[in-house]
Length: 531
Image (cartoon, rainbow, N blue to C red; front, side, top):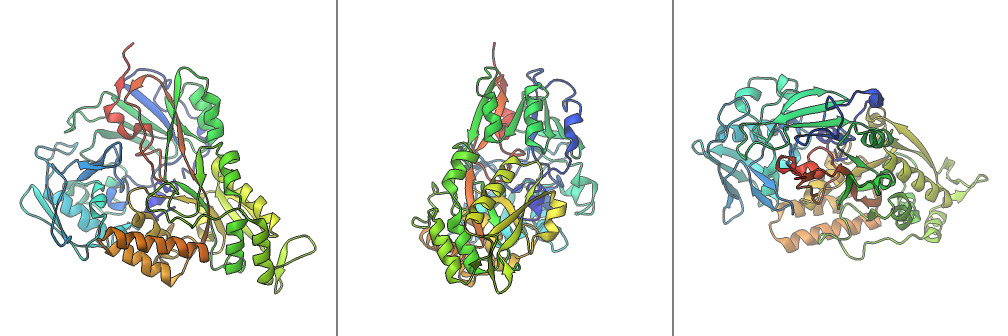
């Protein structure tokens, strides 16, 4: 639910594949998923709109086709990738110098150099480039090459998480620089330095990859890797059970059906991935502060975790999970239906004959959209509507694709998702800053709170950890007083995988999952199990 770029992944990323008829597709890998140990077919719920990092693909790293200057290890610590070491940071925090790895080539055989890094960042920051996440690089004043093997970034202010932004994939200037950045062939036929090469993309059906024999990190043992795009959770589970898939991301109730399967293993990934209800300020009901405050305490988050997620998650009170050091203690909200009713009574929302409250002739009623085929969102939407009804607010749930939902987001509520473990700036700024209201999937609620705007700016511009913590504490406390969203749960991601490889692990994951995350975050290091 983050940026318009994330439509790649959200419409999807973070976050949706828009084709529902995939149940009739033939096996996406050309055979049964449980076939040879040097191939893997995984079922994902979403697909990108573009495979160009210049437009946002892989911006948080781990794109398989590309590499960034840095990458994340299993514990999400930064490690060198196209850079030979972590950056040298100037004493004032305004310069980051990267020495580049030698001997790296793009998949077309051309050498990688500092010019490609400069090209990538300058192109993303160009006003003509349709990359809605460019505000994440707002701190960059300039980037320059010093010879073929050194790149220096100069910042406008000491941006504490800048190194995290250099996991962004690097595009080849000799290919992408000769095309229209927004519509050229590179957006669907990319050339990178990563462990895999794209061999085909049937939109709405699958993305196919083969191991890069010239990969600087060594050719992967899994030679063929296919991502089958299956939007519908039930269809994904059925195709996994039939043997068409080697692995799939599944909601808890469907993953539970594989618990006794000795040929498969279930892996759970802890996440920053939340589900939330947007409360657009341009709707006469959700734009009322009292309604927002009432709904925020009317919801029973604990029951949602227990019943909808079967315990695979935790209550959410904002974008930051309660287990994060960035979480602000004391901002938890208990389920309190009596308080919700009292807030509405005092604000003049009086129960009507049918139980739905009315104020100045306006019924406390609004639509809530969720994406078709997404069982977790559907269940959350229905549970939210049930809790709201007890407070006297009518929520009419509707299912649709993002093409249907997006034009309505200014006034209609949406069951949305988001979350990033890398740094609080990455999610909260795009989610809440008023300057991004209505910018695609940024600030979907059109939230406008000057105190939050100031705190978000302070948080991203300070290099002092204590000052940053104070800024994000302010944001979370303001969301208690003036909710622009009702956060419901942080969900664990569950993956069911054929038990035939060594090296299966998960990381702490963002909202956008299934593409660069999941047990296949490190598929290039998997090895067939010895029998």
